[in-house]
Image (tube, rainbow, N blue to C red; front, side, top):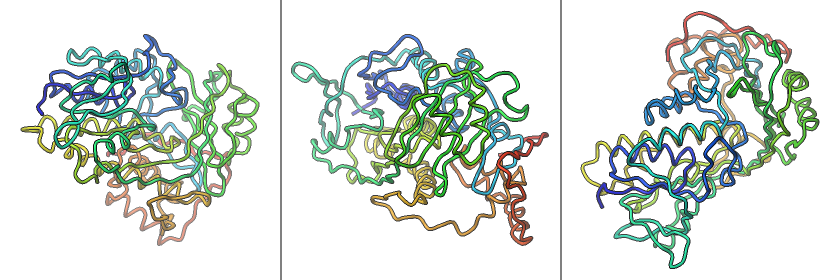
Length: 455
């Protein structure tokens, strides 16, 4: 195996970013996509959730631009909103509304269909990349691993490749395909906690949001399993999302969505929805929870095969991490490829490089969703309750702590909350015996101004 040809299965976000990464080392990169791709931002069958809210976290946004220089400009030309997420999005935790202040985690608000269209156009400008319509039905064998893909069609034609990257998503068939080649499927871990959500695209009237607020984040909690989100997206529009972590069906009409929002811990989103101009019915969607396939633990790892994105880590979408995880993985793959002297053991090194990100992200989801009484864990221990709620309580009054907590989520690391200043503030709060002062779910503190908290 060399560095002549790489094949990517799937032309979604993870597949496009992987193609950009691979193009830095391989002479040819072929992306196989079973859908006929639209030439404008439209829903497509292979991405049933593309009409739901999607978010690019700060680390994902940095990775997008690093992998595909100039793509941020494409997002802006497509009408994306550009905003300081920790300052502009009012977040209601179990302790109360978090304080807000200026940060370095500015992000784009953009619908998935608009984002994917802009990204695809930019990736197709790379001379080494092409997208081909076709359906992969198996992996083609090679010595000690994978040597290409098998396509649906008369005679089951195959396409040779030095490296195959599976970016086919949550419903990837890679474990079964690898089993056909004699490789035991990767170990799986899953937290089953039914998630329902429904997204409505809306236009808000002038003044509907307070001048220091650009959206709301009210996640479900174990004792209050309904939630709501409002985020700016592209072209002056917003998305309102009804969330539930229960067996309750997500709403499919404007009236049902507003009724759902009236049961959320704060009335602010329901009040906003009543004033909004709905640009169509809400789009409901359901998933069973989060699943991690531990390809990095396969021994031996098949030469010539890497899995990325939802094929590896399919997450509860409430946390908005999926696209950013795929972007971080693609950047790690790019860096290893640039340093590789040859292709021996290359796939295993790439897959292993994803481990720290997967450990952090999946661990945070398990700690949050594992607290729901109905959650069922497979291949996992139920997490212990948190020993302390000091940081969450302090974040209701201290904007620097609140932004540090948001940084941890945006950059997939606990380092921001372990900074000496934040640790000192937490110790002072704990020793004082103080508790959060604000209990009114309508009483949202104003955002602080000034210099952003350094990362």
